[in-house]
Image 1 (cartoon, protein in one colour):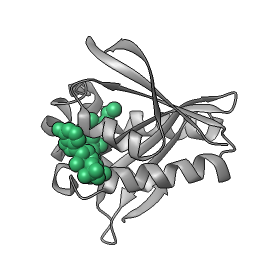
Image 2 (cartoon, helix red, strand yellow; image 1 turned 60 degrees about the vertical axis):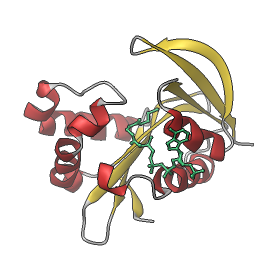
Image 3 (cartoon, protein in one colour; image 1 turned 90 degrees about the vertical axis):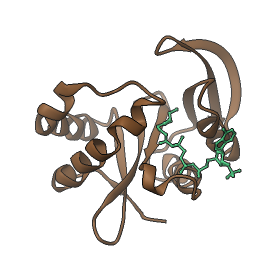
Length: 160
Ligand SMILES: CC(C)(COP(=O)(O)OP(=O)(O)OC[C@H]1O[C@@H](n2cnc3c(N)ncnc32)[C@H](O)[C@@H]1OP(=O)(O)O)[C@@H](O)C(=O)NCCC(=O)NCCS
């Protein structure tokens, strides 16, 4: 598996390339970031680092040996021993078990590095691959909700 690295300032060019290359692919499953995100990427990247420094969010990248970003796995809204998990994998790296392995690694880090006891996730019903990733990692389906205007389901993973 590519290395799972906490996001840094010098990741910005590779992360922007990842988001640009996969923009249309991601937009088929999750909301598009919008033109402003790409136009103002450096400001946004600095904001991520500030949130990370404050301990409210932890952003991780899957980085190949050549320095290419092929995925991201995020813990956001960190509070009270819990966080919300999110992830996206490059189209060219899809279907190789990368998301499943990265979420497994993130589960470990959530406990050992961040001291969390519970992870939450939300997935739209039209994203069965993402649901499979969660279910392979011990996430249990909970209630129904609407996410991005679509029917969705919440998941919980107890870490202890
Ligand atoms: C969803 C996503 C993260 C999956 O990444 P990935 O690296 O291809 O996932 P993996 O290869 O680890 O595993 C996908 C699993 O879903 C399964 N799967 C794929 N399509 C499926 C479908 N239509 N129905 C059910 N399962 C499906 C695969 O068979 C695999 O399970 P397996 O290991 O038992 O064979 C990736 O497609 C992505 O980034 N999509 C866009 C962003 C996104 O949707 N993020 C998640 C938001 S909640």
